[in-house]
Image (cartoon, rainbow, N blue to C red; front, top):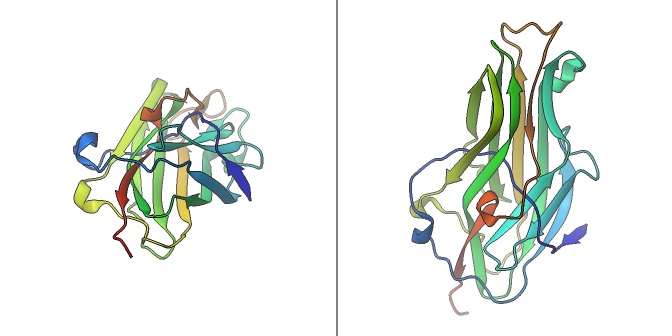
Length: 215
């Protein structure tokens, strides 16, 4: 179990579910430091040593950085490389009297897709004991060569908070997939990746905080 409290790099991919503005969420964070324990990291997109988690200094967000999350097809790719996934199990330790939900998630990366090829990003997250959120997907159609970014914003009424006074693991599932389609895989390579970026909190999992009722 690792404790990661440094300011981190980026988070990647997800899709907008509503247009609720960020300032509609409860936004007053606890004053004390938030600590995130990484319990397990599993998946072909996050081999050991290629994933890091960090909390922003203002306690308003946390970031996940992937350094080797790449799906590809074509020249140089293995048959299993068309799909990569990562499953993170985290414990978010919050100060007594507070609880949190994830209000917004921003993901981004880079893709090179040949004509006829396509790429897809899919992700969801949930607390232990709660139903998984619906996996939101985003598709790109080749030809495409550029950065991509997608944002999932949860409506205030849809926010799911960790039960007060409990410590439940927070699970993040992400997936990248590249389909060769009609592209010529004997001559070309198409790929989609989640890139490390800067520590701007607009590219992270954004917390919504609220105080628990007094005991």
